[in-house]
Image (cartoon, rainbow, N blue to C red; front, side):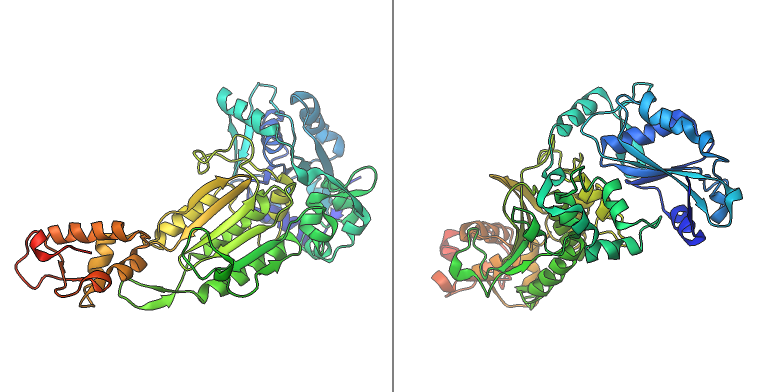
Length: 475
């Protein structure tokens, strides 16, 4: 039986743009077109598509709702999803109509679940959802997909002491469903989204997303710890710790927002020296910070009993996320390929009105781009043991030579220590090499009578020439 929804909800569905988790097709669409979408969703992170919505080029507004006259007219959709796709995709289908406007017809809303299998269309194509596209994979890409599918996710595990009924009463879920379209009862949503099992237990994904205190119901650590270390050392010591680390818990969406607020406040208290020699608050691109935090929450391995750790140093930020890269992902293909360990968490976070993971698959590329725009060096990605680490350094993109000369535009001299502060170079000897090259190019000279720890460099006061041993050993 079709569910009647208000016109306002129908407009929300019509206004939803095509993306990584959503698509729509005309009632005139052939089964082959629906196969491509369904396979792409099942092979990726799951998603939804509506059948009975006309293309924007042919109609606008409410007139795009051009559904089927009866449910029987849409029976071919079931045939397509079960028999024409190999193997059949896991899905649920709901029929929708607009209250008081039954003449507009019935729209089929199909929810495709992520799948552990690799699905092919009747034409033998392996499709994968990427943004708003259902890409056709070549044989090697299909093999990589199959390998990544072999990775099971802890998010699908059921919790022995946390029931689906408890999950359905969580305040975060009730708040989320206030803006969810079409309107859905909490218990129906939990079951339809596979957040429970036949025994009435709730899943890890459901707890991460909506539980008031996920660490209280998940038998693993899953908070975020934020610490400030007043040092630039690679390995901080306890004495470098400034204050008590902050612990952030709560539903994933709230956890992300609270973490970003706490990290931003902590960063603003860090002072750095700019190229003009002024002490200014450290600033990192907010988009880069957000993407790193979101990436850690949605892609971490919840089976590892550890928290996400965010360490704020004098010259960098490190975000340490539990778990190695999933599936076929490597450090080499990190910016070109995509694999999601927690597809349910990723997909349902994307259904918030202002989703933190709005641009699916572009997160780390956004980090790289925003760091460049801020004229800071690219982030560093690395794995250490069972941890994925992202480091955002406050190292200017400009070359050290340029920074030294810019500083000398407004200062009489520069020391090795100041130059290292400006450039992010940690080695005194490496910084000396920069000075030597500038001296040999006639751009700077050693300040007379300043040696040892007091050594400094300045712009030439004599005819430019090569530095020589007669000038005394440069430092």
